[in-house]
Length: 260
Length: 250
Ligand SMILES: Nc1ncnc2c1ncn2[C@@H]1O[C@H](COP(=O)(O)OP(=O)(O)OP(=O)(O)O)[C@@H](O)[C@H]1O
Ligand SMILES: [Mg+2]
Image 1 (cartoon, rainbow over the protein chains, first blue to last red):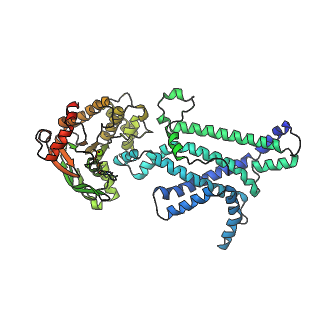
Image 2: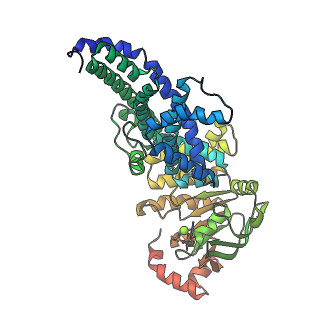
């Protein structure tokens, strides 16, 4: 395929691809924010077993987890404006980015909802009773006892979720968004050095994933330091053992694997 | 003084408590005995509304509530006048021993941090944990965790402390240190209702012993009356079954 392999192109493509890194990260950040808000809205009716809303949450989860992200992108981009036209809302001029972030956000929301529900439910019920017995209100018990522990439990799943999202953003180019993968396609077509662009592209994704994973692992360690039975000072520089919370989550296994 | 009147509770079709009435005077230590499934835990949990009683009245100090029309505010009030020590300790795992004791002082009693801290340190010293203030529960033994649980209950200055089998999750060699702490606070005149299987302990701290079976109070009296001269056949049977353990207790 294309021109003969030339490693020099890999290096010259790197800065060109990095120019569009901002777009990729914007999609990731925007979708994460949307996804966490959506996740809470979907998780709450399920945790508190609110009728009707709970069923709607179920439908939402099935749709976003049961259909390919690519189809979701097309449905939202081409379908949503048509539907909204019926109620007199004109979205045809909305930027593509709006649809991209909305779709990835709602898609992420489905996984975030399960992450939130599982993490909250993994906090031992006895502690909540102790909080109530001491006279705390449900809100105080949630914010002071459940939430801080649920955060620590959620991080490994959150980490999977962010990395899956990062990889999924590579499909946004199908709607014509010039993010990193789109740029790589263009560079490849222009120069006929496809292999080199994809090597450069994979390298950048790898570095970002790796950095995110390390950052989140550090966050997890900090949030769960109370479960560390070794001396605090020593363990900072050691790799964490696959400890209690991670085994809890291994059973739940709600992390999503791979791309679309 | 605590007054439970005509408390009933059912889980579905299972009537677990039937018209239970029990008064506990200020400074009194009441020990509840009874076979497994007799409703001891449920009764204790009804007192602070961790279980919602089906009917009856609960009075703690000057506060009284009718269970058939208890509102959210009543439940909070009731809980602020009682404290509980749990079988599984139920410490807040993301908080140190000191923070566990301080938590309700800050959040519920709204004390200034310095004051809460001072009081909590004093209580932890009292239960013998002055050297473990900054440890997380995961780094404390069961006996130490339960002593933090007791300090946490004392911090609330409740009208009554409810103990649900405070030593039955502990390794045998750790039971003594926890019972010793409970004995010491009993001597200070703190009102307590204690569910326990430690007969020796029951005999020497209780002012009154209540024997429950099948969701009713079968018999109550001084430890001497209940242990030495039980009147009811069910009490006698129960005591015969657990006697070997009674000798072994500390
Ligand atoms: N949450 C619940 N839901 C349904 N049934 C329950 C619940 N809690 C307790 N029960 C039932 O209520 C009855 C009394 O239980 P309880 O725990 O009060 O007994 P107990 O006297 O504390 O026993 P033990 O000595 O084993 O702790 C049992 O039949 C139990 O199965
Ligand atoms: Mg019990």
